[in-house]
Length: 296
Image (cartoon, rainbow, N blue to C red; front, side, top):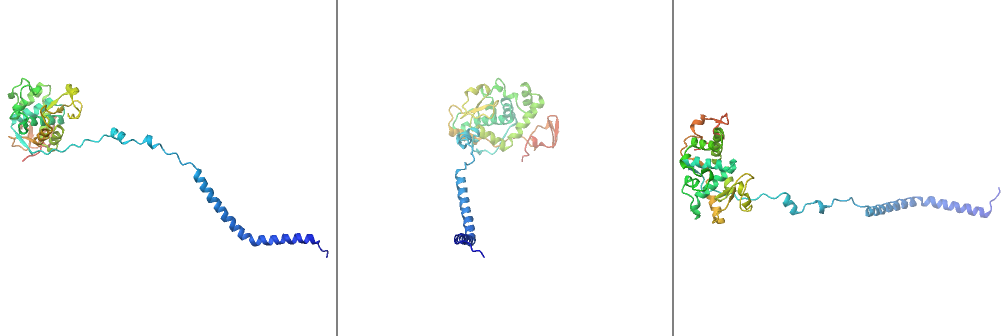
């Protein structure tokens, strides 16, 4: 057998030694490689997250309204105190009742506006109780006072004494008989509803005077309430204090009724069809609740 040179055996022996060493250490090398890969991956993610830009957020400073902007866009509703009346309800004679509600119909275009006018009339009637002069001792004297209410200028109190005469006067001002009867019925009903009367009292307060559209330029918005364009605005008497304003509002009644009425429905007998059926705008209503509340 031919022997290999010594140099050749040394190289082969060295190669075998390295191979044995590699095979022996390969599990440790694999484990170390895996750990190193994990560390490198972790650091790679950290570096990536630190340099990746965050999504662009909207400019909150330019899009979010400031408190001032919110106030301008959605002004809070004024908090008006609910004025409790010191007089739960009053009853008027037929003459006073129809003189009062006819005036309100001629002075205001809507039901709420008419109740507001009536509230101001009661304020005038009650001025002596708060030391604010005297407009009259009863409804007739107040509404027919000289130079006070234009629809009643040059008109005798005897022109309105009941339902029929009220319809006649309204017809002279352009109402049809049906329109006049409907308007009188609506105001009659509303005056017996404490909620609607209280709404008028809260709106008008203790103000004794009102002005129409032609006087809008003279209105003081902070002091003269106006429900809507086309309605009257109400203002404080020249000599009236704010304390008197509040006191007068409290003196207004919560309900107003006809003293002579013995029917559960406060409408004249001649337009009643039956105890529970009434004519309204050419149609028969099956209940009198449309016109009035059933009273004791």
